[in-house]
View 1 (cartoon, rainbow, N blue to C red):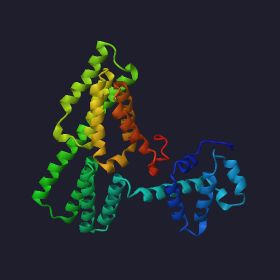
View 2 (cartoon, one colour):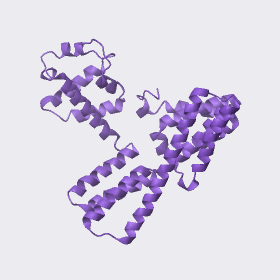
View 3 (cartoon, one colour):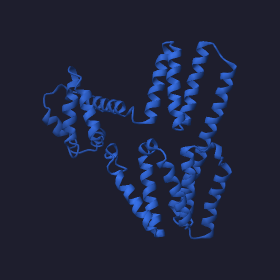
Length: 314
């Protein structure tokens, strides 16, 4: 048995925030019989290990029944933590809220409670529309169609309305997919060529921008695709040494993200990357007033409790 190994359970526990750990312990304390009792004591012991050491666990808990099939015990504890995190974050993440409503809609549908299921889908649709979740809106429409079919009361107006919506959702999703593809191509070039020096390099970058202009329809832009649109241009101008234009698109994306507190909280890693890029370019352009403002915004991110145990952000 290895004295020190990289263990998924240990990694997961170490990446939990204080509030997440507190919630897990409250949830676990409700169990008073069987192997559930061992969740908290095993959790605490592993949490206190700087490096995972299984031999010390076996030595400390010698004689405990859960050691007989320890791999199963670890798996159960891991699953229990994931379930607790899922419950804890269900109201914090937009996607989690929507998926929870979709799950409720499925349960009600299978009980033939179609009207109640439909209400859950309508609630999910409202949140999804507000937050531009077009892939999820397509899924909501798919579940809505199943209810209409099961009820047998197909209405021609509703049928046509669903088709119009489906076309809108698919087109917006397709626009995003095209933008993501172009962005990835651009960054693949950047990683190999860096800031452009030759005419051939610039032509390769321009080709991507031309593809972007051909595929861009303003009516199909929503938050994510709009962000990518600005992101591609900022990267293109950075690659071609045009820092003033690059900074314009970086600031456009900052305005876009800061227009919604919910999006900002949900995509703080993206905002962090945006801030650090803007700080670098502003320093190259020697825009001192902006630099001070950007650095203050960056400092504020360190006080967001729920992101403190995110390794990427750290």
